[in-house]
Image (cartoon, rainbow, N blue to C red; front, side):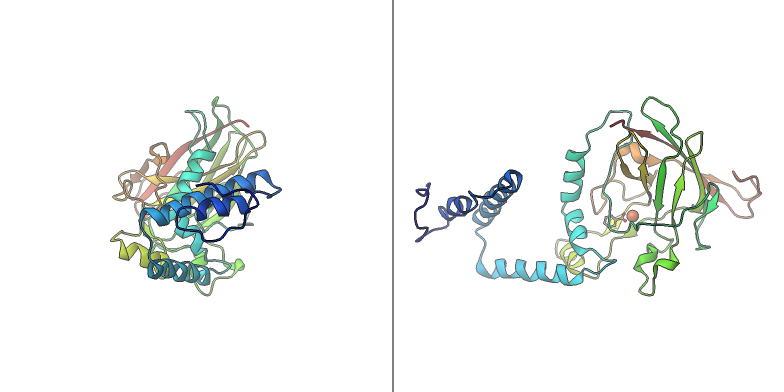
Length: 297
Ligand code: BEZ
Ligand code: FE
């Protein structure tokens, strides 16, 4: 039931309070903010009516969000984790990045990217001597029209064989960046580096998001992947991962980020075979060849 504009909003009930709140936003100068506040009010109120939210449950929700905020630090973003695990990040990512079929698909950013990763030359070893199976990556950056893109800026980051990013170490400082780097594609559009083959790993479960996953009987695992962020003038920025074919979590990613087109073929080679850098490996190793298709702006 609509309230008369300018009327005193009192004696409101669970139905007409929604319209009263929307009217209170009527003078919002920013048109987009007004749309967002109105829709947020309508959907949030409808949610509370639909589940007949009790005062105890509402207060539990407030406590949960408060704990989520308290868990955040410069290197831990529990709100992003919450958005990721309820599929909101994937929803926003999907609706914001509609691309040609030939373009590499965008997926969730995640909380572990760091600005100013070490700038390394092609062929560098980013493993920081962490244990794990050696993996030689040969990434080609091309336009959707199959033309090589030189001078693309390519950030790489991944977890170690235990499933941790460097920033998750409590003693981490920016001087200790490992399993992350920034490369520039060469004239062939190539970025090449040595790393370790990624493993499936759990997202951090020692906070409120972990408690939510436990209470809802959900696993926290992400399928193995390497993150890539590619900037090239004239093309849409690309944030994606390359997953590992055959990983058991591809269809149940805790953050809903898997795209079939971003599953890479990590090929196993026996010890003694020549490695892409022309040496002979004393241990088994993997190679990954993947071609990124960049969408023009
Ligand atoms: C990640 O892949 O790094 C990640 C993404 C979303 C949530 C947690 C981790
Ligand atoms: Fe990751």
